[in-house]
Length: 161
Image 1: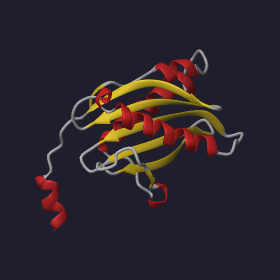
Image 2: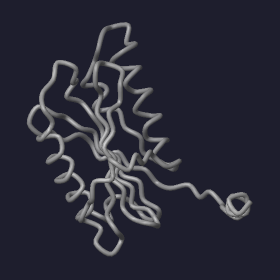
Image 3: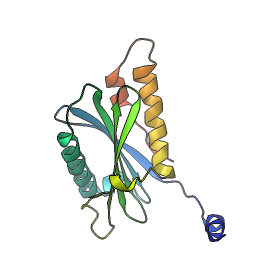
Image 4: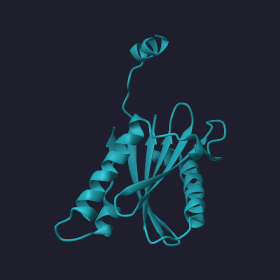
């Protein structure tokens, strides 16, 4: 019953998402998306860089397999309870592999791996994943002209979610 009271008291507030382009790391190329509870991504460059450093370290350590597309996307979410980093990568054409990290607001550039705790995306992060899914379909998997990875990498979500 307590969870129903909590739901009744909760009020959703949109947040800003900003597409920050694409970066490369070894054989990997990753799109970068930033969600902020207030302000915009340009207000937190140190967090963005720390998130990229963490992501690049993870991607570099992944063993190369024939199933990897070597394409992925990051979601950096500066929220009310912490800073979340989601590293998602396309595998075997249509599977999304997920890594999840969190940094405390008191030390927002020190990310700890939460992947073993089986966290999933929150409602704002799901908006980014939904966009990325559609962009992957439109530009790569269901593109009548054939896969266009460059178009996928340049497609970005910016606005209120």
